Length: 171
Image (cartoon, rainbow, N blue to C red):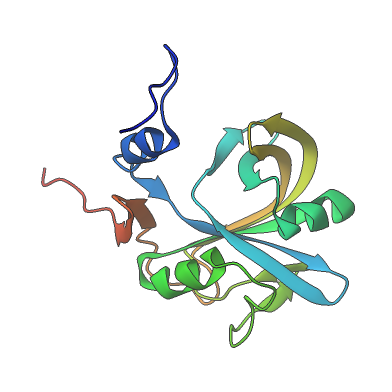
């Protein structure tokens, strides 16, 4: 028998189940800690402003990557393509060696993953506490569609707890 919830509250599982119905884009946020790259998979990110160009990214408060970004003030946003589900899975796990066996290159002092659908280099302007996460509001200093080298830009999405991609409706 489950414990009844106070009026106006829901269980974490009910919230997870509801949010699983929302298709979200997938990216790997990266930053450098000295010469060591750090990264994590996120699905809570998006464009925030065109003038000036800004993005928002949400990171777990316990994240080592968040600590690095708070120190350096900068991060990369590797927006993943449909062909990069393996990278999304690798960077979603816990542990210090997420870059083990992963090809990357420095780009504006940020780790860049080749073949991503898009690349954004950003500098954090504000850190907004939000429950068990922190929302980073960041200025975009560089943005390039198509990754390196240019690739199919079909997006990697996360929906119903699995990776997939968007299929346009027939006209």
